[in-house]
Length: 459
Image 1 (cartoon, rainbow, N blue to C red):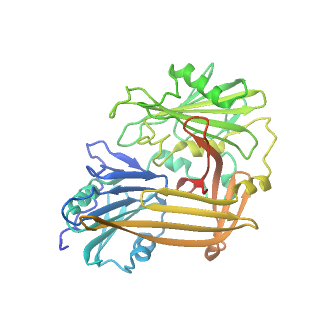
Image 2 (cartoon, helix red, strand yellow):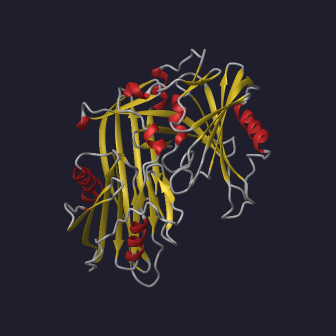
Image 3 (cartoon, helix red, strand yellow):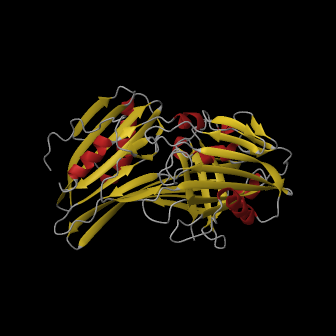
């Protein structure tokens, strides 16, 4: 795998690229043509198509950004150790390059060629730091067949610092994660609106509109309606609100995208349900659609209703599956006046006991919460290679840790044994999810400094 010029100008900060790019966290990119994409809140993976006739494989992994270390070399070293040294046993890169962009990013790139099972591989790590964040991209390539695709992907990759992300990142201290940071309100609602969104008041509520997002120009809207008497069933309330606003049935399925429904009870005592659905188009690939989020909560005999609109969830930069997602941050600031009942911490702790797993792309993350305030964690990342025309090999590498955990209100605090004195605090939602409103599965979503990751309860 000789390619002496590969490292030169490999990472271009193409902030003004003309082509519309997709988003994941602070990364903007053009997906490799024909590659299979798998996404979860904690990882975006691109897998090269299976070649016919000769060995070859490639994967590109994009990881969520996290707080940067100073100097940037420390962020690179930490990323190399976790993402390359531990999984592949490669202690140091053979080639190394540093670049700086005019808009404040420092990118450190490491490249190493290695041989596994008699086949040549190249692993590439880019770790970019700036504006208080650091992000890592890993590419693992077997042979030369897909190397040009990887180089093209990296050259088109750029990084942005969305204003909404700066405003909504939670503070480090657990106590700062537990309450609204500002005094926005309407009627019985108390909340913190996304910073930078403009507010307009109407007789029947208020509307917040985002500024246009970089690269895509997307604008999103959050509408908060006055409370009204409710009929009891939250799913019926959400469907009725959806039909009244958008004149369509959110439970319509094929050929349209299925609805996504979640329900739960806030640690502050109120039941809620969230209904998400794409509207518009004729059910064909490539149709222009709008993502809709309808939130309803039961407050005694009244119902609260909040509606968000954006681009489709897969590409939206405000109410989508990619980072940053404004909804979790907004949800955790939401309170209601005159609601005194609170779910006891012991009761919520008991509901969290057991194992929870998040899987996306070639990565897995799992927590097991036990009685007595102890937890075990495990994660893994897998690399795939074609060793012959008829044989594909996947190698998985794991990481593990143990520590203590506790719950207070909507905050879960995890303290790994080897990191005592440096607890990790996050805001959590314990919910059930469904696509039809009849069959439900439990999930646990934890919002930390790097974004929200949702876990499903193990059988």
